[in-house]
Amino acid sequence: MATEETLVLVKPDGVARSLTGQILARIEAKGYELVDIRKFTPSRELLVEHYAEHDGKPFFEPLVEFMMSGDVVAVRARGNRVIEGFRSLAGATEPTTAAPGTIRGDLGRDWGLKVQQNLVHGSDSTESAERELGLWFG
Ligand code: IDP
Ligand code: MG
Image (cartoon, rainbow, N blue to C red; front, side, top):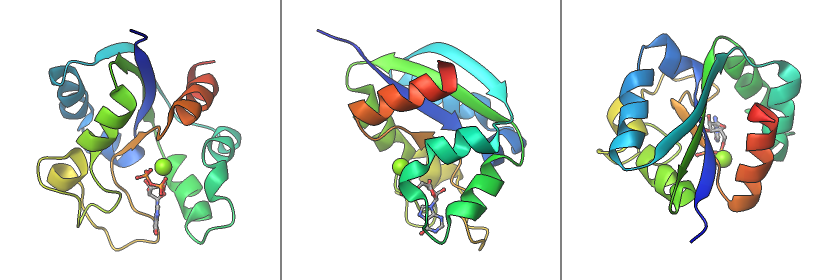
């Protein structure tokens, strides 16, 4: 069986709040492998590529600004159905309504800002995962 890979990002709010270890521990405890990990402050160029699908939306510029405001931890995670599995671990986009038990539901805060600072990113399809892993680890 082909083993799948996904891109997980611990966003700057997660790194600044020292939640990286807790977040990665949940991924490992679920049985996924942390194949590669990098910590750096991403460039605008990388983020504009990464979030290309959201270009033109009202939260696009605040999102890019937020993501380049500090270090991000990028993770290549591997496992059976890890793309869907990590999205399930992460929970819904909005921290306020994300289910308890999920990363965003348990740890995410609503800061009342223009962008949802929701701790993590996870690729949403095999195509996105391949594209995003190329951008962040290529
Ligand atoms: P996802 O991260 O759950 O896949 P997307 O819809 O792909 O959510 O949006 C990318 C990121 O943009 C979100 O994680 C969040 O940080 C931010 N975002 C999405 N929708 C909104 C919104 O309506 N207002 C503010 N920020 C948003
Ligand atoms: Mg998304």
